[in-house]
Length: 574
Ligand SMILES: Nc1ncnc2c1ncn2[C@@H]1O[C@H](COP(=O)(O)OP(=O)(O)OP(=O)(O)O)[C@@H](O)[C@H]1O
Image (cartoon, rainbow, N blue to C red; front, side, top):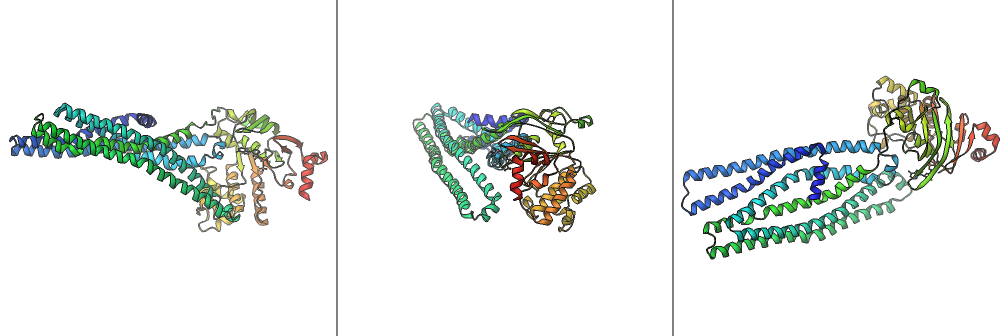
């Protein structure tokens, strides 16, 4: 258990001192909690010895009230120090996590980690933040209070002291076994909640596909199975944990009874005076309350352990190195805008690109064509450093992209993806995100060039209309044009264009083509093309198959060759 406490303290980083400082009021609170009991004991003793008078009674009364007030004050100070620190720690941790996620390669997000990230941000951090930071000072108070009770038992009689120590030891054995069970099950429960989150996200995101393919029954069943599994895990936890929690209660009852029996025996033998006997009756029900409270709180902390594991797992994922120091200057524009130099790359355990080399001159258009799964998207993704190359290098304006900071590299590149993502925000902010310092006129100008100004003005609040989650209230073509407006506003010299395969109506198609022509004016273009007629004017066409460049040239040259490209053109025409 000390291990968990140490991990929590380690996590507090620069706030460690504040947390440690909070132990002082927690320590004092522990003393003050027991003070009324001891004061009452002295009052009873004095009464029984006939030494109590009105003045003493008044002083004791004041002391009891003061100890209660002081306990509340110390609790408040310790809570402020600890809980407030907890919120600060987690505010920092969330920022750190956000920064870390930003630096992870795209692969991390496609390898089944979305559920884990959601759980870490949505459940684990909130749980530790709300439950655990305050618990630390509680634990200190419990330990102090229990220590005081045991010392006072020794002060009354060594046998009473020894028995109370033995009962505390029994609590520790039962309590630690209970924590072990709780720890084991909390790991299972946390893993279950992770896969449940994953399933819920999958269901919510894919609801369109699920409905259109009539998979509602099948997918709902998967989801229902996950809910049932989560329910079974919770019941299994209760079944395993319950007996130990009851055993803890039992230890409390038996321990208290043994203490009463021993003190009665010692009194009957004349070993302890009658005042002590009355005192025991007073202490009895609070004698082991602190150690019991300690283990109840620790049970809450064990859930933390699994949460801490997952937070650390996300932090342990290797970041993409962003240590580039070079910047682009005006003089660089002479170099090839893009150059792939013997690039090879593989996803985890799967080689995809083999020895890819080509150059794109500034202002020219290069199209990537070829069979599905050949590696076109992967080639484009490497340029934006979604992943880093395995071998070889990619140069932008003559500089290895790993030697330039990601921020500077992204200044050079705009990307139009097939799958458009719009934030749940105003149309204006969805476009302005590309260049937050842009003026309203510039944003509207970009919208006009992307052929979306007219339909935006017809929305209820024009540019200030909030788009639904994922841009649900706009058509596919409209969303696509807003994403192109973003890129036009960004005005980066290189444009990566993943040509849409989804069919849109003729009007939308024309508008999108016009928007793309605006975006591509005077830019260096890397286009992933699916419809060959759109890239006839490309300066260079690369046919990618099985991770290699199998043909290279312009349309006319490749048609003359009568190879793979010519074959694809004939096939599409027919
Ligand atoms: N994130 C990923 N993790 C693992 N393998 C991947 C990943 N993305 C793509 N692949 C694999 O890499 C290979 C190349 O895929 P890529 O998407 O680059 O091909 P493509 O030519 O763009 O295909 P398409 O025209 O269908 O989009 C495929 O075998 C694909 O399964």
